[in-house]
Picture 1 (cartoon, helix red, strand yellow):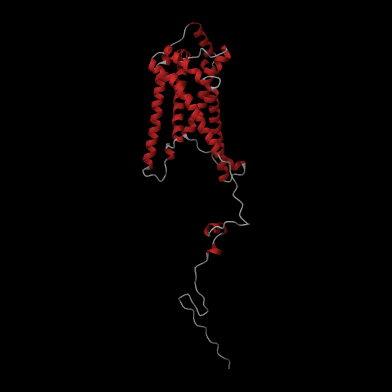
Picture 2 (cartoon, one colour):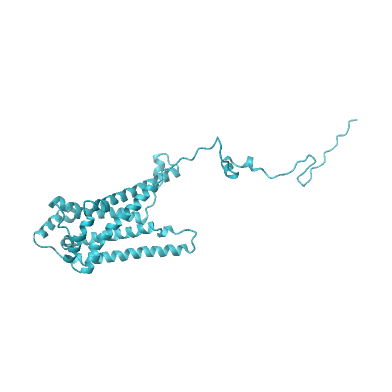
Length: 305
């Protein structure tokens, strides 16, 4: 007769058995992915098999500094120019009297040394750095979304333009036309621009009022809003720079928006009051100087329409 095999005792419900099996929490050593182990444990000071550093990307900080500091220099020129074309005419209430102050102060910022340093070089640097930053952000967006083919690049939109940047791009042709009519065309046609004064601007308002008034309002308005918006960004006072954790951040953002636009509107009105209200109503210049002014304005294609 076969010997009866003894039965094994049943496994109890308390997760233990006679064989010493005990339920334990899983160890993080084998379960943690390899990319997180370095952060989970205390890092070692030195290791022979250290992972290579992540690939570095171009740092736009130097370009941002160029854009910022170039605006400082151009702001100095814009302030002097606004004083000569708006503030002084408002105080004197006379174009001939304002011309005296213009001729006294103009050599300081239109000399062979000051004009390139305060106007030309900062303006070119500001525009070029702005374009470079835009292409940099586009490049970063393509890398972030892994766009490898031309077809992939077409599906990824360019970074959105801020209102300040859009005004800056709109200002380029307006300021370019103003520079051409006052600093480039007169020396080209008459040998120098010594006769270019507020009377030259008044003559243009009287001869071509529609283009002169419309162009000057656009130039001053776009320029002032761009300057104020740019300075708000440099001072970290723009609405988009309100911290998400700041209490009542929506109210703060709205307050900043009204402050920026209110300041821009006030400066634009003051500038236009002197430029249009005084200089724009100065009338034509007679004699041979007036005839030379006519020759200059007749050479501008935009005034032949």
